[in-house]
Figure 1 (cartoon, rainbow, N blue to C red):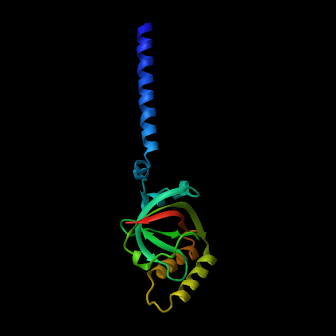
Figure 2 (tube, one colour):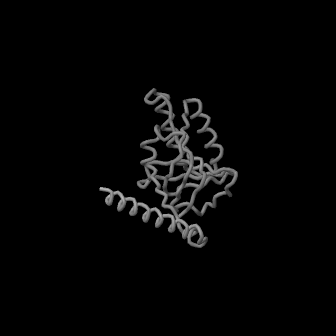
Figure 3 (tube, rainbow, N blue to C red):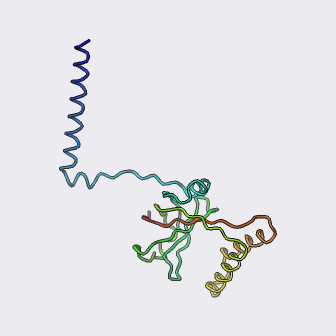
Length: 175
């Protein structure tokens, strides 16, 4: 029995020393450590929205196709789900440059905090009026039409309010 314990202890010591040697090798080689990259997993937009209640206020990793880049001085863009039926606004903070409108159509991988925003009837009206004013020279606006339809649902009592979700980006990259 003593020999078995001695063998197990010896094996554990060898395994421990091997792990320490590997860690030492990695930490002493600066080029090797900079090329090692941890894999980040991104959820499709539709999965984030399906679980939005439980993810609100938390950091999410979301991926979607850039549909619209705000050109009115705001650092934000909109991403779509894979089938184009769902959307989410991505807000960029002060540390980011203005996004180039040419990123539309590219896939965006975003890490940031998911925040819900509830809009009641009054807020919807104000939003619609602002959208009309900002985009009056652009012709038909599908976003405006969608918001008018939502306002009609709120006015009729079909839904109590409209909830939209925004990710305030800590990081993002484009593919």
